[in-house]
Length: 167
Ligand code: NI
Image 1 (cartoon, helix red, strand yellow):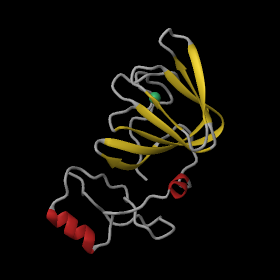
Image 2 (tube, helix red, strand yellow; image 1 turned 180 degrees about the vertical axis):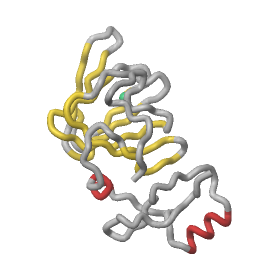
Image 3 (tube, helix red, strand yellow; image 1 turned 120 degrees about the vertical axis):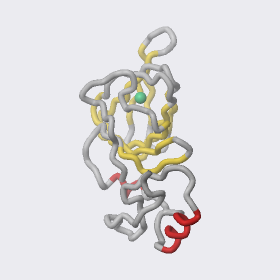
Image 4 (spheres, helix red, strand yellow; image 1 turned 90 degrees about the horizontal axis):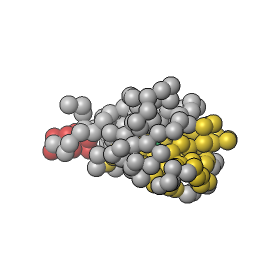
């Protein structure tokens, strides 16, 4: 079992503690809570999206920024077209932090549709719906989805990221 809480992330520019790559599992013990308080670590930390987004440049490679109730929030940068896929068991939420992208999807009749998601907007793609995000210019996006979600869903190809970094 990994530690419930860890030392501040030394890379945090405003001095705010981060996860330091830790994963929280289960309910913290009294001792873990006491240790966390004593060392001023991650109990009530804020997360700055711009700061997290400044930590990486690559595209289609989501980073986990926090976890709650079995779901992850991830940050990812889109550029160009992704791969068509669907998720059998997960609904996925996409929120644009910066830029814009087009969500292409297939409707009930199999017809291709698309919808632009602008900065400050979000869309939930229900499980089972074929989709692919396309970004003509770079888009910076927050994802909210169950921890089990694979980025390429039912497809495995060069876009597939099985192990995601935590930042
Ligand atoms: Ni998807």
